[in-house]
Amino acid sequence: MKLKLKNVFLAYFLVSIAGLLYALVQLGQPCDCLPPLRAAAEQLRQKDLRISQLQADLRRPPPAPAQPPEPEALPTIYVITPTYARLVQKAELVRLSQTLSLVPRLHWLLVEDAESPTPLVSGLLAASGLLFTHLAVLTPKAQRLREGEPGWVRPRGVEQRNKALDWLRGKGGAVGGEKDSPPPGTQGVVYFADDDNTYSRELFKEMRWTRGVSVWPVGLVGGLRFEGPRVQDGRVVGFHTAWEPNRPFPLDMAGFAVSLPLLLAKPNAQFDATAPRGHLESSLLSHLVDPKDLEPRAANCTQVLVWHTRTEKPKMKQEEQLQRQGQGSDPAIENKESQPRGASWFPSLGKPACCSLISRDRVPVPTQDRLGSSSAQSFLPPSP
Image (tube, rainbow, N blue to C red; front, side, top):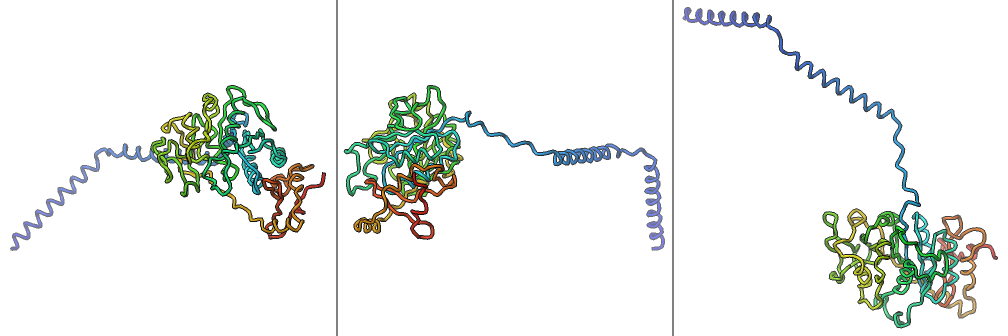
């Protein structure tokens, strides 16, 4: 046993000596560690350089924001609005005109359903500050709604929209404002804006550069939260609609715009008063474009920028009672407001908005302020 332990110890000693000798030999050999050290140093240098660049960028003043195009360089948006005399007419037109006043390079074509222009609309246009053309054409009796008929039975505003299209095509007929039609070669876009809808000004940015026919969704229409095109890979592939989805163009009047050159190149394109219910838009668009060539706007038709709103019909029981007593509202108030002296009555210009409305037979109606008290007298402009 003693011999074996001695042998083990001897072997261990010899191995240790051999390992020590090998280590001493290696200490004298040249080291190959410089390349990794150089690579690490280069990485540190690059990081320091990048940090210096970032610090210099932070000290540099921010670049000036891109300047928007000059208004003269923008295509003109021609907004066609049919309107008719009713209690809420002026309120609707005031609201719409102030939305349009936020849009540069816009020309408002306001068409009355009347034989001749009314003082109410003429005064409103004159005070609006907008570039406008005033037109008037009476809807034929055969196309008018009869007593008790719902509004959807007959298409409305057909004659008025076609009158505006005739003016754009150089056929004249203006009764106020800009009388001359756009000269040949004018770049622009045509949009049909009813006076009771609600419009985001972003909508007009979307439509301005329309090349053919641009489209987008419309909110609160067709019994749906919104109605409009379905888009895939930047192309219109169908329509989100519930009512007669097989219509050629199941779009609302507020859901498309047409380039002016295209409209002028198609002189027969107009609205058909005899079109079936819901096909009025298709009667125009079928002359202009194929559904596959529609141009989706509003982030590929994923944003709603216009809503098909309607104003509640006012209740006039108190007015009727006062009229029976010979104490009805003064019918001259509305005309006086339509021709202010010195300053406009538009709220955006520092004066209160209209305070009374008139009906088709020019019967005035008192209104109330936010506190519920009669405020007509306090809103009157200076007497002429």
